Amino acid sequence: ELSPEEAAFQARIDGNIKIEPKDWMPAAYRKTLIRQIGQHAHSEIVGQLPEGNWVTRAPTLERKAILLAKVQDEAGHGLYLYCAAETLGISRDELMNKLHSGEMKYSSIFNYPTLTWADMGAVGWLVDGAAIMNQVPLQRTSFGPYARAMVRICKEESFHQRQGYSIMMSMVSGTPAQKEMAQDALNRFWYPALMMFGPSDKDSVHSDQSMAWKIKMNTNDELRQRFVNETVPQAHYLGLTIPDDDLVWNEETGNYDFSQPDWEEFKAVLKGNGPCNRERLGARIKAWEGGEWFRDGLAAYAEKAAKRRVA
Ligand code: 3HC
Image 1 (spheres, rainbow, N blue to C red):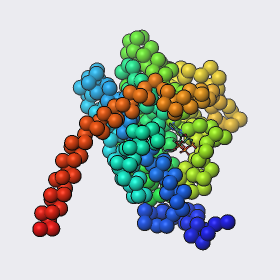
Image 2 (image 1 turned 135 degrees about the vertical axis):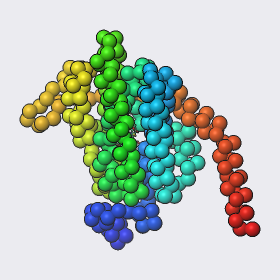
Image 3 (image 1 turned 120 degrees about the vertical axis):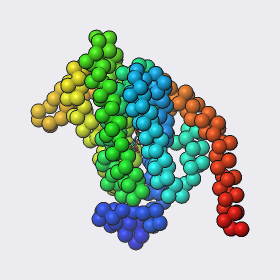
Image 4 (image 1 turned 90 degrees about the horizontal axis):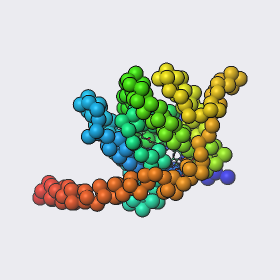
C-alpha cells in the first residue's frame, strides 16, 4: 500500500514529470539512483584506461589526436555523472572510496585487455555502440540531472562510435594482416560487449523496480537485441564475421537470433576475476592517491580565497 507521498511520487513518474534533487523521493529511489549513476560514472573513468594505453602507440598523429579527444570526453562524462550523483547527497570522496574498496562496480567490459590497434576500432564501434544503445533511452529517465547529463553524453558518444568504425574500415581495407587483426578484435570484444547490457532479464535484480520508476526505460535483453540487430549489418559491411555460428536472421520475429554470452565468465568478471580487474582498479587507486597533494592544494587555496572574500 503506497503512502500519500509515494502515491504522489509515482503519479509524477507516470506523468513523465522529472524528479529534481530537492523533490521528495523514496529512500530506495535515491539509493538505486546513487548506485546506477555512481557506477555509470566509475565506468566512464575506468573506461579511459584501455584506450589511454594506445594514445602513445597510435599509428598516425591524426589517430592520436582523435583518441586523445575521446579519452578526454570520457573524463567529462564521468564528471557530469559524479555531479548528478552528488545531487542525491553522496560526496565524490565517498563514491571514489566505494569504487576503490570494491563496494561499487564499473562496467565489466573494461576488464578486458586492448592488445592491438584494431582493438581501438572494436572498442569505439562495439563498446561505445553498446553504450549509445543503453544511454539514448536514459535521456528520458525520471531523475532530471541524470537525464540532462545523458543528452550531452549521447552527442559525444556518436563521435566515439564513428571514429571506432572508421578505424575498422581502414583495417579491413588494408593488408590481409590488418584485416585479420580487425577480425581478431571483433572476436575478442563481441561477447564482452553483449555483457554490457547486464544479465538476462530473468536474472536482473533491479529491472522491475527500475522500470517502474523509469530509471531504466528498456530491459537488458531488449537493448541487447537492439544492439545485435544494428551491429550485425555493420560487421557484414566490414566483411567481418560475428563469432557466433548460431547467429541467424529470424524473419518471424524480425530479430537476429544469437548466442548468449558466457554468464559464468560475466559473474567471474563481476567478482573481480576478469583479465584486467586488478590492473584497472590498481591504476585508479594509484591515480587517486597520487593526486591527493593536488586536491589538498586546491582545497587550501579555496579556503584562503573564501577567507579573503569574508575579510
Ligand atoms: N558490468 C558490471 N556490473 C554489471 C553489469 C556490467 N556489464 N551489468 C549488470 N551489472 C550489475 C548491476 O550493477 C547489478 O549489481 P549492483 O546491484 O551491485 O549494482 C547487478 O549486476 C544486476 O544487474 P541488474 O540488471 O539488476 O542491474 P541494473 O538494473 O543496474 O542494470 C545496467 C545494469 C544495464 C548496466 C544499468 O545499471 C545501466 O543502464 N547503467 C547505466 C549505463 C551504464 O552504466 N553503462 C555502462 C557502460 S558506460 C560506458 O561504456 C562508457 C562509454 O563511454 C564507453
